[in-house]
Image (tube, rainbow, N blue to C red; front, side, top):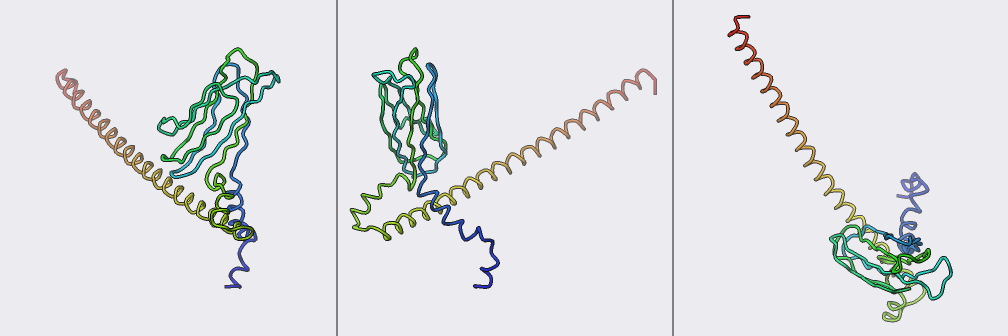
Length: 215
């Protein structure tokens, strides 16, 4: 066993820890510049049963007071509204996904003629959105034991992501195979129609030339 592991590339030793660390810190700080008119959106592709937690706050680029307000709407892949706020300078939303696909968060200024605005969005999902302080208090764990629980959660999240990716790959392969089969049948039918048209054309021309006594 030791002899085989010595032949492994060095990066293999760091692959799993790096994936775990990425999942533990999977929170994104996003800055959006809102135009005076129109809407800006951000999206993320998520699978089922993922916890999402986000805070957003408006910052006026012109430093005007009071801070201009915005409206926000978060929708699921099938168009269901998960969060909708109007005339706010800051708010938050939280939900657990029930549909796999792209979740869309859109923001727009309430006053179209106002100045330039920026929105700071702190978006967390999966294990990064879990309240580990509450877990530690509830289960009375701390230090190394708490970190091990975080790593355990990260490994479970990796496993779920791999299953999701495998399912998506299987679905896309199935769609691709179905499409290829349909294209093949369409090509065969098109070729058959072309051959039939050519035969009919030859028979027609032969009959025509025979009537004209050209052959």
